[in-house]
Length: 142
Ligand code: ZN
Figure 1 (cartoon, rainbow, N blue to C red):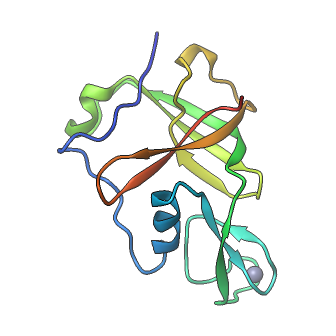
Figure 2 (cartoon, rainbow, N blue to C red):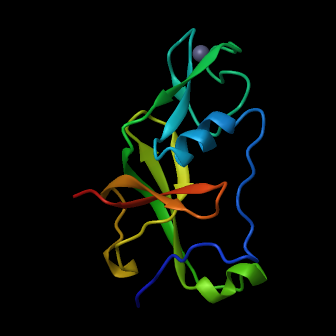
Figure 3 (tube, helix red, strand yellow):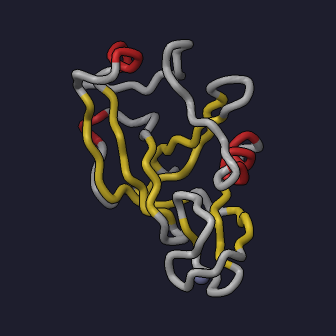
C-alpha cells in the first residue's frame, strides 16, 4: 500500500493564523520551524498559547527549532474522512516529537506507509499550500 500527501485542493481547509500562533505560521512561510519558548523557564512549547504550561509565565519568544525529531506515533487514514480529504486517502498522520521536546501533528512525505516506524528520525520540509499558507510536513532524515 502506498500513500501520498497531496497539496490542499481549493476545497480543503488550511490553518488560519491568529494572535497566538502567527509566529509559527510566519516561520513556516519563511521555511523555518519556529516554536514558542518561555523567556522565564526557557522550555519550548507547541501548540502556541499565551501562557507557559510549566511556569505560567506570559513572556515568550519565537525561536527557530532544528526541524528534526522522531515519529512518536502514526496512523494511516483510509476514511471515511471529511469530504474534502477523501480523494487524498489513504494518507498518513504522524505525531513527531521534536528535538526541542514538543509534539507536532503532521504528515510524513517521501515514505510509503509500510516504511513508517515509531522512533524513525525525521526532518521538516515545507509545502507552500496557498499563497498565504505554508504547511510543515516531515520526511525521513537523510
Ligand atoms: Zn515557563
